[in-house]
Structure formats: structure tokens, C-alpha cells
Length: 141
Image 1 (cartoon, rainbow, N blue to C red):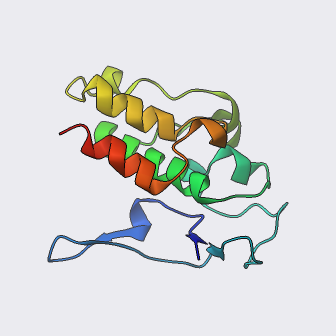
Image 2: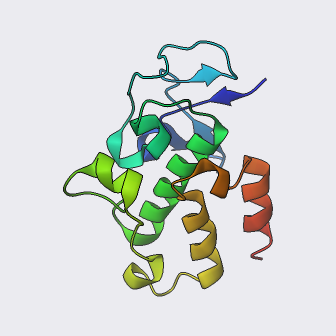
């Protein structure tokens, strides 16, 4: 069974004293294709981290969480999330984020490519699973 979080952001990621990582606040989460707190057409979440399909009120899945995780990693590497001014929803749906290297030249092209793939507007162009994302990250070392 899969659980889609639907609100991945820095405030919901906790690093334990032992160095482990935990995800918190499952208030918007949804199990697989079953019903959850929200329904298709209802828009809830944190705009800075929200994938285009969630902004449109369309169905979400694990690729939506990958987008939000990509925004979080982008922020870790550059300082702010990619879209902080103007119509945030419009920007998530229609504009590409600035290249990470423009804000942090120490980030490798390979890592930048991974993060930017997470941020593709079309979920079919993103990593399809977290395992696929992890494999790409592990290949960096």
C-alpha cells in the first residue's frame, strides 16, 4: 500500500538525533487510490512546494511528492524555494525554476539535473518512484 503525503516541505521533515529522517504531518495524506481528507478538485497544501497537478486540483500520486521533495532540495541547495514572488501557483504550473548553478555554482551538473527532473511540470517526465530517484542519487557517488 502506498501513502501520498501531499505536503512535503522542510517543516514536515525531521532529522532525528541519530541522523535519521522522518516525515511529519500526515494531515493531507492519502492512501493509494482510496479517498482521503481532500478530493480531486479541492486544493490544499503549501503553495511554495505544491506540484502543478495539485494546484490544478487534479489527482496526485507519488510523483507529486517527488516534485515537492525536489522543491525542498532546491531550497537546501540555493537558499529559497524557486518561486517566492508573484503568482506562485502560475509559476509552478508554467515557468521553469532558475538553474541551481546560477545560485550555487558548487552544485554539480549531475545533481542539478536530478533536482530539475523532480521539478518537471508533467508528472510523466519526473522520476516515477522514490526508488528511481534514490538510484539516481546513489549513482552520483
